[in-house]
Length: 345
Image 1 (tube, rainbow, N blue to C red):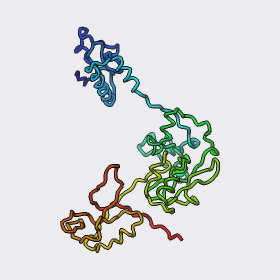
Image 2: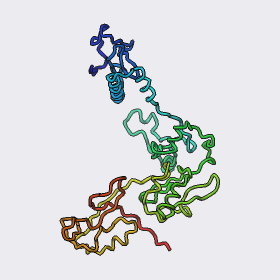
Image 3: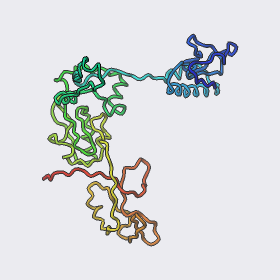
Image 4: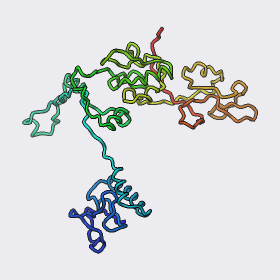
């Protein structure tokens, strides 16, 4: 291992008798994939082989070089190793995204005249007027979708090389501009990213039950929406998030939540079980042998005990469990109060 921490490689360390050759740029000559030099069993990487590069690139070379050294010590054919490593080096597929909306010019910032500002240090940007600020804030900046990297549509488009959309030319009559629904406390709904796959419709109707989504419109105007296009908050949504899990694009996303911790007044609980019965989403449940047990308090937790049976928590906070796990420790629930809904008949 030759540490190369200077600005250039020191050629005096490896002379002509070493069998290691140098390039005309003053770097060690080695195979670009296996990093083996002209001298067998000698590998080179990092700045001494690439020149001035970033730390990330040097670390990446160290990882690939370790694989090559391991293959060499195991007696593998280095030419075959080089071909294998070359095939593994996939460059990212990048392509231009078709503008969703026509490009609008930026509103020019009002500035002090040059003659007035060249002799002082006053702030030269005078700020937008109200009309200018509203026009600039409403301008679409073609921001990256929050589902980038997780979108199935993006993944399949890159995989199959579908970079061009011959059915879209960016004209105002060629796209829909739907309002984003931000009324729900947990789920964000952007109909502009919907591809009408109806997965959210089916999971909400067939699996969960509230039936919050449906297909509306015809032809080019077909859209997945709520009944009468009301906000998702005003539907019978139970905030389960199943629609978000099956959505292949960024049309349905989970909102960032600020959870608050609420403690139970255990000294006032009479263990009637009414909270279990009235909870509409099954967040609380009774433990086995609830009716046959008598109650003892052990510090801050409420437990059930019957004779010498093991203590069991009175009310368990149900959570989504990873596959294969069945038990969770007793904990105070993290909840977020929902906005009050209007009374509906």
